[in-house]
Image (cartoon, rainbow, N blue to C red; front, side, top):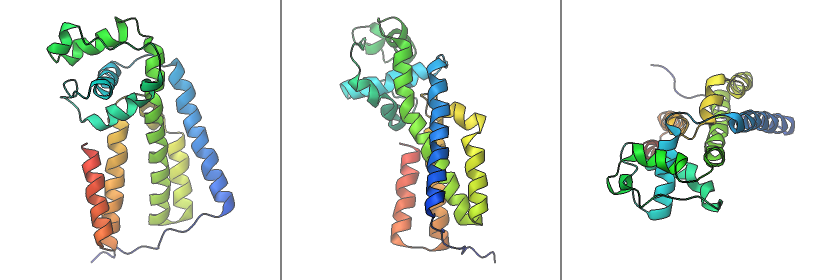
Length: 209
């Protein structure tokens, strides 16, 4: 039977923490600086409009096609932005037609669409940094120091990860929570305990939240 027990996660020394932090800053800088120049992806408006509508009204009517957690996180920075109009009087609101409503919200209500998108992308960039960190620590726990650094370097400069981290969609958040769920499940299989069992359940729930 395959042995599930691996070496415990080795603590980072001071220079490793410094290098780890610098690489995360590089990742965040790449995603953040490029997001300013990135035009809207076709589905970003749906997610941003749904998240902002829920935060402002407490109504889930625009969140019927996707779980609301990531959309809501993405819209949080918009609460501190002035001059954003939510077109609740438009017929699409009463009809719960999020395709039309999101288009009206972002492009036809006098809102600064690019500013909205830039701010809505920052929480996703943060989740991307967490995903990068999780890859580093799990790889380190699985296969040692060298594997952790290889995983971190590949993640920091991975085009797909950078691209999804700068889009206000649910893809990156789903990936993060799926990875964390698998990591927690692996930990429970390696050393079962009520805490790791509970953590696995919570993270699994967040994957679909």
